[in-house]
Image (cartoon, rainbow, N blue to C red):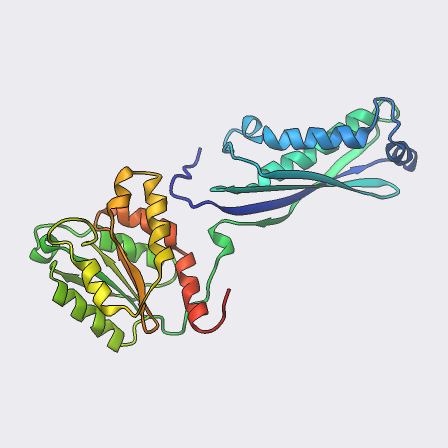
Amino acid sequence: MISTENKIMTLRRAKAQAVLRATPQLIDILKSRKGPKGDALEVAKTAGILGAKRTWEIIPYCHPLPLDQVTIDYEIHEDRVVIIAQATAVWKTGIEMEALVAAQIAATTLFDMLKPVDNNMEIGEIKILEKTGGKSSFKEELPRDFKVAVIVTSDGTFQGIRRDKSGQIIREKLAGFGIVDCEYLVLPDEKEKIRQALLGFYEKRFHLVITTGGTGLGPRDVTVEATQEVIDRVVPGIMEAARSFGQQRTPYSMLSRGLAGLKGQMLIVNLPGSSRGAQESLEAIFPGLLHSYKMMAGGGH
């Protein structure tokens, strides 16, 4: 199975259909709910819901996931029945397969319930109608000439005795959003130098500064203090999301003091210095963090 360990949970919905084509006589029997095996519409609805719940057991690469709702609805025409299956879940992976299986199982059950009368039916037009959720549903348009800086705060990296991994991870993540031209700066763990660097990027009208390092409890961890002296407003939810995401993976995430806030309309975000901590934080806050620029421009949600 494909790993979903670094995905965030979002509200996901999917809608699928299957079409059962039959003679008008069979459709009349179906509508009467008095077929040879009983009420086919109700039995098929139950079967479709059960199929959605068992999708992960049927299709090898599907993940088990906690379904919040599955519904089966019908559009009954003179020569066909359109089965509409909808599935909802708050989870880390798509839910379209559950909707597809539900629609197909419901259609097949209708076939089985009606075949003692006439088995010249046809099932087809199986397809996804809608799907929402996941990071692909949260795409943002960035301001023109979007300017980003990445600051690595580490005595060892500044002295050349420690290779920077976190800064490179951040740059790769940004490149995935089309942000390939960003300033890159390595500084020692000295509060005044970090503070001056942040102010310098503000004066140059940067939109986003991401720091990595100096967010822990060590005596030289001062990035948060430097950030506190610069920002006008704290945006607590950003790092709350990062710590919550990390805490589900390691108990040490709660020890990160990282801060996020605004200096004017420049957003500053403190990420941990560890490559794993930086990576997990990025997964938690992107692309949602980019929505802040629409809000600052007066666009709201």
